[in-house]
Image 1 (tube, rainbow, N blue to C red):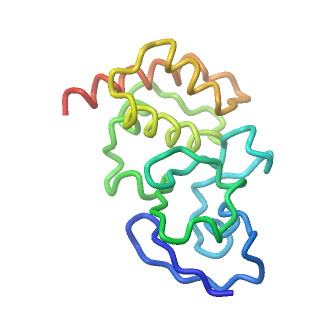
Image 2 (image 1 turned 90 degrees about the vertical axis):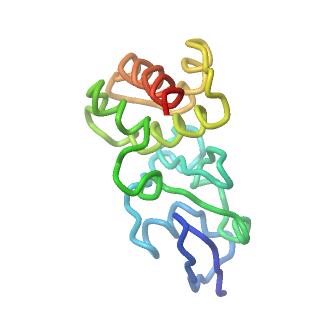
Amino acid sequence: MRFEFTINDQQHIVDLPDPQTPLVFVLRDWLGLKGTKYSCLEGICGACTVHVDGHAVRACQIPVQSIIGKSITTIEGLSKDGNHPVQRAWIKEQVAQCGWCQSGQIMQAAALLSENPGVSEEDIKTEMGRVICRCGTGLRIRRAVALAAELSLEA
């Protein structure tokens, strides 16, 4: 079956054998966008978080047939120059350790700040807890999100 959709502001056409193919596999295997990671494939860990029409979703849980006509943003499309406030904060706070969850964390944080620019510390803790970090950078993640909120308000 042939599917056409917009990813990172570019039109893509993909021929897939199954309309229930999860978006994470389309992104990685058919389109070569390897920034979106997969891990649990059950929507629990959040490593595969992308934006669908601006909202954070788990790409492992979204069948490709459900994204027709929607705008998808992956970590590769968050900013052209890596200058998104969340990306700048991640670097300043030196968040990354193992890196597996980082694209999901960044996409979760970007959606959070887009939807709630005046985010509280409790909001950050709750929302960022939806993406599992196994190597223990949770405190740096929360600091980076708070810094990104400040940077977003300055812009």
